[in-house]
Length: 405
Length: 140
Image (tube, rainbow over all chains, first blue to last red; front, side):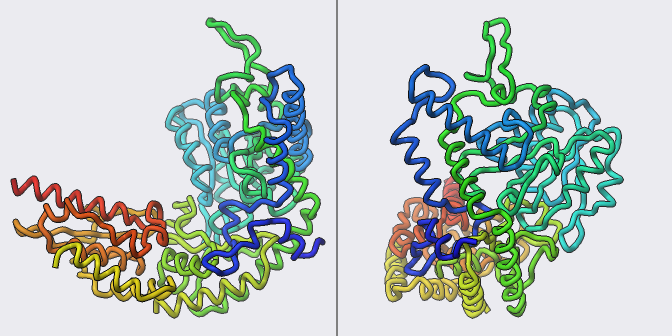
């Protein structure tokens, strides 16, 4: 694997200082930093071939359209989808789930139907389904979790019924880092003919994702959490679903024929891509995926496992520190509370020491309620972080204890 | 002392420290002097919800002056609300309404505590002024 110093040199922001202290960036679950190649790709678009896609007959438009479609093929390759037409670009995971929830609801949902999600979901995988259920008179069912942050599979199996129309769960919990047994969930749902959406926002960047092997019906993720630009996201949908689902937005470029009486839509994926898409974002995402492939996803997973182990060991050594989510199958997210100190106080002091963490409910209030807390401090690491940075976090936490005790 | 006298005093106190760690320690100390709200007022009606920490603020109007008591579940936030109360408690509604809180900028609170999102500093100021306006209306 590439040397860690060389990896860090690929990310210009990692060498900057915050309040005269070296930046320790542990908020990768919220968004990741960008390697130079992604920044360069964006700069190249805007300086050499920027023009709207799928429209002009001119040279630049051809170049940008080609780069955009190549990005679609790159995403297909990255998650091992069967066809590149099964890849739809969106604004992000939130946009992806809202889109599917709307279209799926319009096409298939009747009063009394049921949608299953889990107690671990991010608000982005709760609210769109609630909105759809409200509109259609459907019922939202929630798979409970146990004290260590695992979902209760037995309860899930009992929940599946002839009324269930769709199951939508995360691959990894954003608040706790727990890896969810998606293969088991998908297998059980499919045995009853129920489709499954996997929210890969916290999964896609931490290992190899193979949607064919996983056999999920939909897989969604955000570009900005996998070292790509903000504002670009992906829906992977099996061909049969994308062919049947109606569009979730209307506008330019998604149509076949438009008259004031009736409009017929373009084929998928284009019928889901109304208006001018964030094509620079898609092209930047493609560069990010190339970068991840060049480091090697197995290498990334291995290195992150090592960091998680080191961080868990050193954080649990701090007296009075409680970690939420004690699964042995986790990505490097550590959600914790330090004694009775408010997460906000901890976060503010860490910030002044150059350590960036997330504090609060992490857009997953039901998870916090489950543990009877108002929020946590979340350190979310990725492969460009180091053990020395974890040491800085630990000494920062000792400083916090000194100040607030 | 006028509102501005107290603001100037706070600015002086904070200017003694260059390092924000020391300023935080000062803020924590100021929080300890906060006139604490009666537990019976620590309810939803008196809650100012910032994004991350809870702040309860209770006004008491004797027909002339407004007195505030407050609390927060975060210590830094308690320091911030204590600063506001130092400046704005025991004042007439008119004084509060017309006050210009320049000390927030001068001691670097705005830049250092990202008030818009995480600690509700601006919501606290807004709520205090709203109470003042309401009592002013009652008085008339």
